[in-house]
Image (cartoon, rainbow, N blue to C red; front, side, top):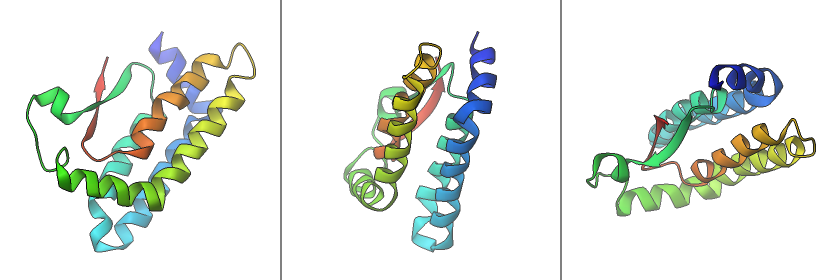
Length: 131
């Protein structure tokens, strides 16, 4: 079922949001200091292309231990991300999610957009795993 959902998702909105994430990644890679955020953008872009059957979780929750992205430096990185890029990608997912939820058939796809909002706002310290 996830495969069918992912194919329909990709055609009707996932491609656009995934490309938006990749564009954000390219913009981050232009500056040297943006490379960690750019790498995260490409991972989350993959998640935006094929979200059914996957979820975003904290790396601390997955591994059981802290790392550089789940501590204070990760928080600072997330605040910088939120100010410059995160808010715009989150708005894109929220608007797309609302538009999808206007029809009954679109509700599952709207829910996928809403699932992407938290990682849009605070991606540092998060990872994408299979459900």
